[in-house]
Image (cartoon, rainbow, N blue to C red; front, side):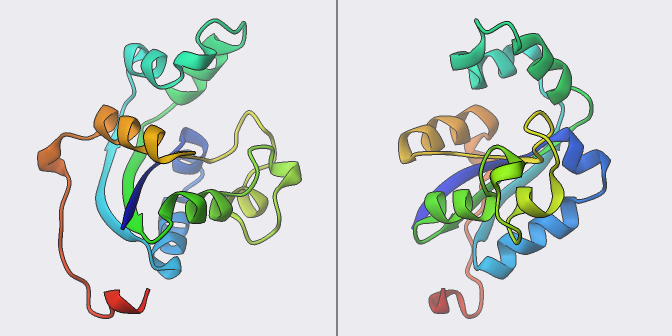
Amino acid sequence: MQQTLVLLKPDCVLRGLVGEVVSRFEKKGLKIRAMKMMNLSTDLLKDHYGHLASKPFFPEIVSYMQLSPVVALILEGPEAIVGMRNLCGATNPMESAMGTVRGDFALTIRYNIIHASDSEENAKAEIARFFKTEEIFDYNRPGQDLV
């Protein structure tokens, strides 16, 4: 089974969409291994968005990601990374299909609702960045073998 990190960004939290978005993950068959609400420090954001830290728009990313707490999740399932990326939709919501999280809820690339890991390597690094080992749970769900 593969794991991926997902962040429900401030626009998701502030618009009251967390429950509806998390419901989509569960309906897809992904298992929630960890979930918490947290405020993101500037240092954590610099680490997470290190590839963008030198860009002139990076301060806007920090401001946006600190508008409210975010909800961080670890999701697990077969091909969870690509499945989650497909469920999210394209980074630019105007290019996202209806039925995806961004296609249904986001209007601009700046406020695009959700982040999901884009590779196994990044998922492992991001999970370690946002969660301690003791915050990650393993459990069996009835019907889990049907996924």
